[in-house]
Image (cartoon, rainbow, N blue to C red; front, top):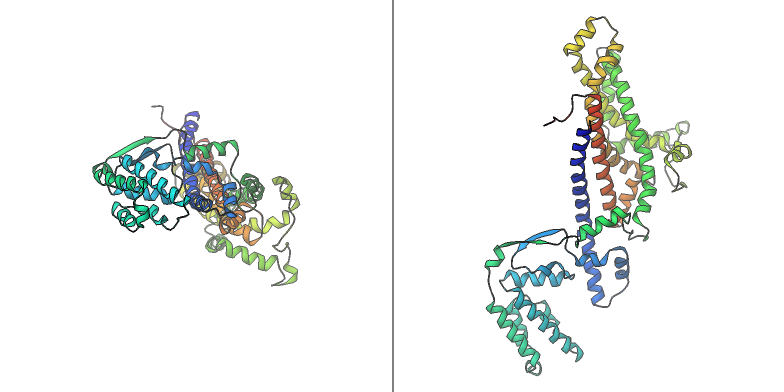
Length: 451
């Protein structure tokens, strides 16, 4: 058992890191665009939204490389990942892709900055287009169009000299030679992972509240729904599956199997809408209005799951039914079919030959082996329930993690979105780990060899 647990943990930890890196990269791509816009606004002296982005983004991290190492052409400098401005970075790449050496390019860029700064001091800003040119020919064309009063300055002659040096340094071979660069802990992913471990999950861009506080308030509702749903799904699937196995040749069993197939074919959102129309409104008949209508209700964010079950139990019944019925119908049919398959095994024939009752044989002999597919599906059912609860929470207006994620996508609050994605991945991996352990407990034959 210990060997199995350690082997599963050895697989789970790299998977957790892979999930975290995926969530980080997606968040980084979207937030880096905001950070670049903010940097451009700042360079133009614009305010407003720049302060927001600076507040919610770890601004300085975007000056660091993405990961612990990078592989890029030999012609790229070590500092290429350092420039923050995306336009500046792309311009440097365009020069290098034309075979220009970094040493000569760096000298030219410094002289160009000095030249443009001197002109700005004189009040001349109409030649900023020079800083956007990315070929020596384009630079020469821009310089030739300058007034004669500027062409005679010493800074201008230095520019021309540096352009000639760039043209002489052209070498395309280094573009095709890969180079490995180790950045160590000074990278964006490492800094982000340290903050996650410390509990600093970033701030929402909508209300600037810590994202973990918002997710913690929402996750209590999601766990309240999904935990009881998970228990009911597997409990009902086992009870109904065994009943269906014992009555599969009777008309009642065939009717139940048909009903289960029909329930499984109904999408969760459509089933939820039907339940709302029948039992949470006066649309069909006032006497059927047994549960509260979906809508706003006061909730205590600090309330525990047990408190929510007792305080808002009537408002959780229909959402739980909407989640439980399709999954229960699916697992019931799988369990019943597995019982039918186990019934044909030699050990089952031996039990039948002893004259034991069918119910006793099912519980004593068939159940253990027939539960294997359900245990294996436990790890997959957890993310399925969380994913299905997104629509359910929206339809029933429950302040859970699914509704929070949908609202965050609409508001482009990517910190919240990808933190929820990270948590969902963690729940999936932990669910798979738990299912593997339960699988080995039920069937001791499942173990790793000693060698």
